[in-house]
Length: 313
Image: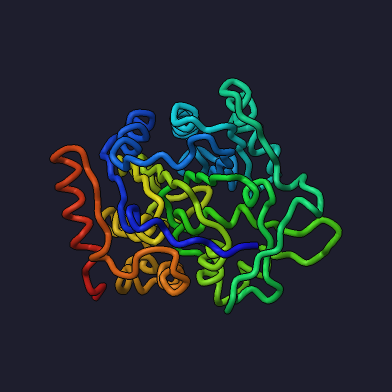
């Protein structure tokens, strides 16, 4: 497998930020602000957050998914395939419960359930210096797509990830067990002191063409399935996963969140720091450019920049 390619220079650190509680409108505005079309004429794999069937932000909201799929078609995608692996529950049952199959049928998308892939449906990943004892694999439908798009949520993670944004959403691309093998990759991940570094390392094995973060609602503690829910009223869009996750952490801090997410400099948090080491995005908060389309968004972006650049004391 080829390693992740660097974020295009024109999009490095650029993140569209929209204040809205209307998911469909927020997605459209954020993508307009970002001003890029990475999917025209390409086969697209769309990775939602279907870790469980719990309501957003426990899982991807149907309105967000619909708005994103409709925009990808409008941008000229050649095909769109939706797929995931749930961490909490049977993936097919989760996708059925949240209405994915009906929505995909209505919008002309294909679907894939990673739990049901055969052994050759997984591609070994080679990340130099990885903390994974046996390496890991990624789902072939994502690896072979010409453009990977992912949509994640804004939330904390009580099982050691600390926060689950764009970097953590990539865990669903990795199997729990490979067919015919007994080794449990998710047990390794969740029992490791290096869990947050390992999360970042998954992202070194692929490069997304687009990331949309639905922060209309957020878990400020608990997560990833249930937690303390607040209305944050934010949609983010970009390509740079470091920048998106750094801004997501700043939003969680602005809302009031857990000690693990709140302490230290944002760029020193292990998921983000390891992603920077791997060259997956910008290396410092000053390199982030927040794009907003109104005074409210720009004022909020200014608040977040103060948090991003604080020393964390």
